[in-house]
Length: 246
Length: 69
Image (tube, rainbow over all chains, first blue to last red; front, side):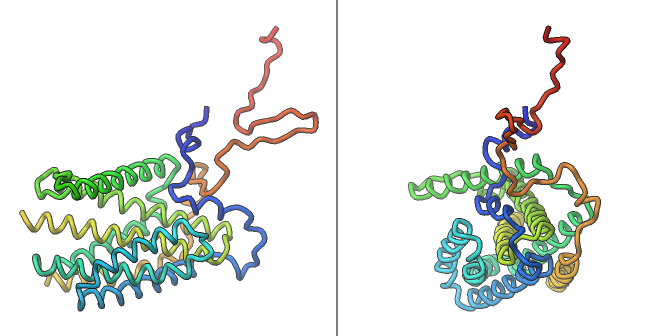
């Protein structure tokens, strides 16, 4: 029996677009292949667009809700559409999501001054330290690691979805939003899982560059990193708000 | 003071990301047998032989004729 029978049953990747693009890489010339430089530069472009969007959202907080809705739609379009077209949707995703983050940060700042820059510093701090741990081989992602992170991410997603649906009926899952020990512990767990998703993104980009995937996968890798960073930032902001409200 | 510290942390971290991100990961990371197999076929690799029999990679077992008798 296979050591990773669960992976064989449920699939190797949480993202359906990842699998099909690792096949048939022979047909591309060197200049048409994915590189680490390209993926990092495209991540920088998406970050710059996100900051520009956040600047707009900061000054006009009413843009937060449309930014969040359009950004979420664009994220799903990018994930489930052909990854070759990620370059056309990912920049818009970054800009709209930036608007949402700008508005959310203004809301948080009015309640707890200085919380925004703390969340930004911690998000990028985690990004850099995990990148160092990954590159140096301190953290070694394996199939079991991926299965664990993917399962936990799906669990959190389902919990948020149930909580969101319950909120329409005037109810909800209380401990998710509480500032008690359990609520803070839950937030810490979610921040941990979001951080570990960064390691999976690094590994995907590294192997994509090593195996010479097509150039457009640079955009896809940058997009997946961006999605994780946005999630991580929101969760860190939530955790800091819970801590400050005690 | 807090704001300055976290601003510097963000800028320094971004600088590290921009530089370290472009460097290939260490051999310790890349030369492993238990790396994640991104996108590789999740069904076992079945090869068709000339005589029509199939060998499933990783599931073949050596047959000991003595023990079968």
